[in-house]
Each structure stands twice: as structure tokens, then as C-alpha cells.
Amino acid sequence: MAGIFKAYDIRGIYGETLTEDMAYKIGKAFATFLQCKKVVVGRDMRPHSQPLFEAMAKGLTQLGADVIDIGMCSTPMSYYGNGKLGADASVMITASHNPGEWNGFKICREKAIPISGATGIQDIEKIVNSGAFAPNAAKAGSVSTYDIVPEYIAHIREFADIKRPLKVAVDFANSMGIYEGRVFKGLFEVDPLFDTLDGTFPNHEANPLKLDTLEPIQEKMRKGRYDFGIAFDGDADRAGFLDEKGNVIPMDMITALIAQAILKKNKGAAIFYDLRSSWAVKEIVDENGGRPMMSRVGHAFIKQQMRDADALFAGELSGHYYFKENFYTESSSLAALFVANLISQSGQPLSEMIRPIQRYFASGEINSEVHDIDRVFKQLREKFAQGKAIELDGLSIEFPDWWFNVRASNTEPLVRLNLEAKTKALMEQRRDELLAIIRG
Image (cartoon, rainbow, N blue to C red; front, side, top):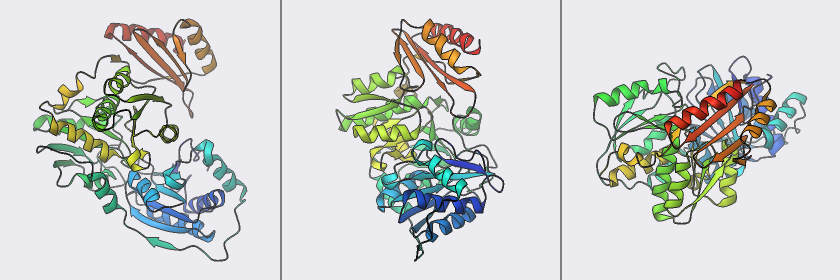
């Protein structure tokens, strides 16, 4: 059991660290902790998501909570169900992009507010470990079903403003992007890859951050004519994008592009970007009359910062795109619609629209195994003391022509480096200089 309670969700290997008995206990602990009375529960296509649902629902209902079973859905749909149905809480049964033997729970309070390690997962773990559950209710809760999918699709489609026919390659990765992608039907032509549900992920890992998983869609796009490409992750709360040539677009460039589209109609709106994002994102938001705001990495932090600032949109370098219109949570189909709208309204291909935003040279995220993390941070602070330091998340230091951020992993002895500079040569020089210190 040890180790399934993570920083942002609960996740383990089915039948080993995550069993039906554990799901039952987590259901009871969740109801004990939140004292919730109305819980929306959705699940992905893994074959064990159904038995885990039944076990968790048993634990929830024994404590008097009514369960609304929204069935198979994407994670953005589960968030929408939570908010739209006025639930006290929600659970999405998924292990996202993890391999097929994994499963887990993404849990929320009311209004799809996420519960992270610090805001409840640790408490739930303690209740599970101690068995300190609330007593069973005198009257058990009920389980009812509700199909949220058509309502979510109709809601997201309201934002479509497509001015010419488009042809889009979409890699569904045999997973919940198949449901999320129903938004596109009739709006533009979809040429699909891996569009049958299969929780064993027979073709590739459902993770668009791993560039090798994008090779099949790139091969497809280079043989045909497309306006752009989309690749979903396992539970469809992330998406990667490719230009008309099949080239991968960095995810912060998509943040900047969507910000442009939103600010056309919403001058002065707050837009968040995570602190690993290019300087160009802040500049584009500024140039288009928005309020650029930097956020920490991690969906729980970003969603809270968005709520506090009443922001319309946020983008994260990992391909999470958050919208006020989905209760300050992800909607990858809405991100894709904004991209489709822009392409259909422009005389330019996507590669040309992205070119003016790609102003700088980024290192990408580089992981290094480090066992004395404090030493590394101390050396970097001393070495680069002349720069402007920001300690929002790890250590960021900015200079006029380059910047870097280093963060320690929550779960492993790793330091993550992101760096950007005004020239490729400077980026490479500073990258190598920092890695020499980090890897000491």
C-alpha cells in the first residue's frame, strides 16, 4: 500500500498496491474526511476501473453519500460533472498516462476544486491506515447514473468559431481522448489514429510529452495534407499539438496562441502561465492587452491561483490547459477548438502563426539525479547572485538575456532544470554551465 498516496492523486498497480479492498477503504476515508453527501464518480477505459468503482461506491454509500455514476468519461468531463451537478465532491478513476496495469483516483471537493497531498490526500491516507472511519450511516446512500457527456460536448462546442473547412489528424491513443474528441464531430474533419478503447495501450504510451509516442501521428501527417494534429494523453486532461508539417509545437507556444485568441474578446483578462514557460508567453499576453501572471507548477496550485485572480485561462508546459469555463480545470478539447478557430480565421498555416512567438531558445526540461539538493541550490544562489531571483517554485533567476529555473522533484532525488536564452549559443553555454554545477 505504501506509496500510492501521491502529491496530486492516488495511484498504484491494480491487484498489488491498489485493490478493491483498498478502493473500498479509500471511499470510506474520503466520505469521512469530506463529510460529502453527493459524489460524482467517473472512470476511464481500463478493465479494472469498473471493479474499483464498485468497491469505492460501496465505501461511500455505507457512510451515507449518494453516488452519481457518470460512467466512462474523460477527466475534464468528470470535473464538469462535479460543477454542473452541484456535487460536494468527485472522483475520477484513472491512472492517466501510466501503463495499463496502473490505476488510481483524482479527487476533488465541490466546484471541482482539486484535493492534493497537502489539502487532503495525506489526511485520507491517515484515515485508511488507522481505520478511523466515521460510523456507517443509519441509511445508506444510493447509486444513480447520469450521462454528463452530451452536456459537456454541447458546452464546449459553444466556443467553436470555425470559418473554413479543416482537416485534423488526431491520435486518441486508445484512451479517453476518444470521448473528449466527440466535441469535434461536424466541426472539422478528423482523421483518427488508435480510436478504439483499449486499456492495455497496445500502440504506445498515452503521453504526448514523450516525443517517441508522437512518431505515428507525425508519419501520418507527413504522408497527407492536414491543418494541424492533436495527441491526447490517457485521461484526456492533456494534449500535444503538431503543425501542418507534423512538427511538434512546444506546449507553452500553444498557451501563448490560445491567450491571443481569448484576449481578442476579453481585454484585461488575467492569464496564467507556469514558471517554466517562455518569456514569449508573458510578452504575448502583454501585447494583446491581458494581465500575465506566473504560477507554480502543478494543477492544484494553478487552479487555486486562477480562482483567486478570476483568470480566464492558464497553460502549463506539460500540456494542461485550464479554463474558467470548465470550473477552472482542464479542457483539452476546448484548447483544440481555440487552435482550430485561429487557423480557420487566418490565411496562414499554423507553423507561420507560431513563428513570431518562438522568439527564444529553450533547453527543455532536463532531469539530473542529485543527492545533496541543498548544496546545489546554495551554489546556484551564490554563483548567480547578480540576477533577479524568484522563489515561487524552486529557484528562478533572470538576467537581461537569459533565465533558468531549478526545482526538486517531490518523489525522486532529481533536480529539474529549465533554461531559456535570446540566442542558441548562449542557451547551450549557460545550460552546460548549470549542469556542471548541478551534477557537480
